[in-house]
Image (cartoon, rainbow, N blue to C red; front, side, top):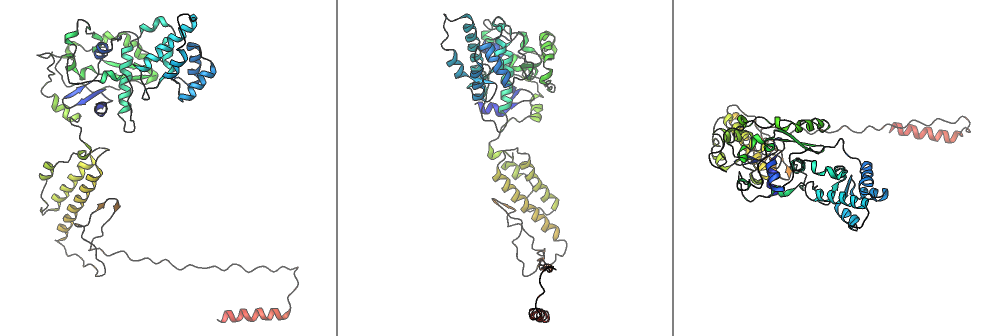
Length: 442
């Protein structure tokens, strides 16, 4: 189920693209399911936390020693601490402990709590130390919009899990548990969980330096309204400019969807209605069906039968058929089936070969040499896994054999005689001269 959600997640719109349209996790879902605030101050950090700064924060706010903080950072290889380390290190604190120890243990408990629920990383065994800064003043813990931060963090985790190389998903996965599609699941519980207008907020949400767009206009059916064609999604600001987002969020009442933007309510509660042109627009900008790997190319047997026949006489028709086969393979995506690619390419090459034969029938081909026999391109595969075979047409002469020139040996220079050495006798000199002369004559 989680893998299916990740496959259909679109980071640009922060929505799931399903066969019937878009859906997402809204602020109303977070407030109704988790019962945490979504109307208070956003969680902000000025800059990423380094390991040295994380160690200093552990010493100041959790009362650890420098050695313990450094050892834990080395164990995690990041500015994080293990959840097991928090439990072991503060489990001995009791009601009779000192006031400072109780405050340290309270911050450790809150850090452990958000690491197990709201801000679960992909390892599910550690939590970032930067969240300890939020518990510096324990009286201010309830002043943060924890639900907004939780949703922004989950959006980013879904975006990360959408990558091919990622195998795990973080975030509060309780928000992704689903058994059926229900457009308005909280209608019968509004007395206990009233709808808050801030769920209509249109803009960016954040968790520290994580900034994600929030688009309620793309999921109007989840609010009981008829879905219309939404505007283009906007690009969130850079994290270093997220401080401006805090000011934007403080005036959230000026940035909610107007009654005109919301449109008309559905005739029946939970009917999930949409305008007539919505699905046609949705088919143009998205994929309603996620195909299995064997059908990743999008080529079907019905489309194969609708193509021109092999017996077509014009080369343009045959070329069109071959390019149609390749078009589906090229547009199939990064995980298209390799076997289908080979099959389609072989068939395309066979069709192109027939096209060449059709074109060559109007001219007199040059006879092939008797010593060269190559199978017909129409019968020999162009690609044959795992060996690449390139056919040589029978009408083309094989390339001539290029014989490399003989090696040229250069004799080393004669040694220079030492003037201080004694002169050789006449007999030895005569013998050397005679041998050299015979060798030259031979």
